[in-house]
Image 1 (cartoon, helix red, strand yellow):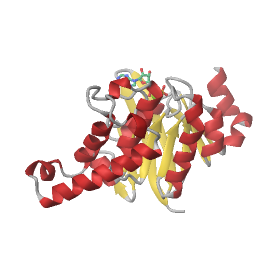
Image 2 (cartoon, protein in one colour; image 1 turned 90 degrees about the vertical axis):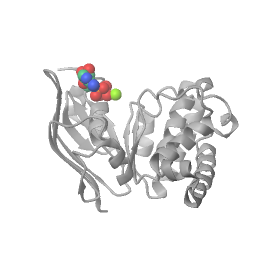
Image 3 (cartoon, protein in one colour; image 1 turned 90 degrees about the horizontal axis):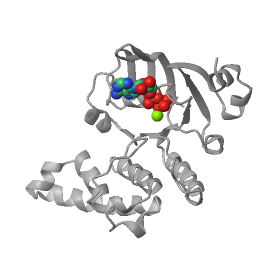
Image 4 (cartoon, protein in one colour; image 1 turned 135 degrees about the vertical axis):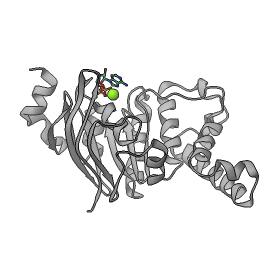
Amino acid sequence: MSRLLEVADVSKAFGGNQVLTSVSFTLEKGEILGLLGPNGSGKSTLLNTISGFTRPDGGSITFDGRSIASQPSHRIIQAGIARTFQLPVMPEKMSVMEVVMTAGTRQHGLFNGLLGLASGRKAEQEDRARARELLDILLLTKVKDLPAAALSGGQKKLLGIACALMGKPTLLMLDEPMAGVHPKLRQELVETLVNLSHQGISLLVIEHDMHFINTLCQRCIVLDRGQIVASCRPDELAQNQQVLEAYLGH
Ligand code: ADP
Ligand code: MG
């Protein structure tokens, strides 16, 4: 395996609140890495710093051999990192299909599309085909013409994943993908993510659902009050003293 992402000594404070303290970890190409930790331990903030939504105070982030810590989020998306949000926010009046298409347009060639250039039309056709395929994979085909507002919380999460995949990322970061997803859909979501991984997409997944973590992840890192306290296989978590302390209090 070779290294895809290297986070080294990343720190972040909001006012006097030190949320991340010298966080370091690596993610190998093809890996499915779990990111665990109690509420408020800094998991979403860590995803925000990697994806360029929050600027770290210090430290370095290297993706595919390039430094991305000072890059704006659209550049990081172009470099191949996509993410979903813990609480997805959708343009609710658009149809599900339109939301996915808009995600594609944002990522390559809005101006080509607007100018009606041949390349723009071709890109739009390709986007539409890819959007259909993704809606199918994410079990959203039957709701593709409904307004995004009509979706359940879980379906909005699946739509967030479809949008993230429109840019053909090599690293997909998911913030609590299972929360709110109907139990019947969960196994299918796990299978979908395994398939993505087989297609060469690496995954960094924040999740509390231990069945999900055990089934999907090869390795986990655990945050406790902004510090990485463990890096181990999922089956080793229950015996890890630092992990128990993180969850049971100090
Ligand atoms: P987790 O995802 O592990 O539950 P978060 O990263 O969401 O944790 O939050 C960690 C801490 O950072 C919390 O104390 C939260 O209030 C704080 N925090 C997160 N984002 C911001 C922000 N934009 N401004 C101020 N404080 C923030
Ligand atoms: Mg969070």
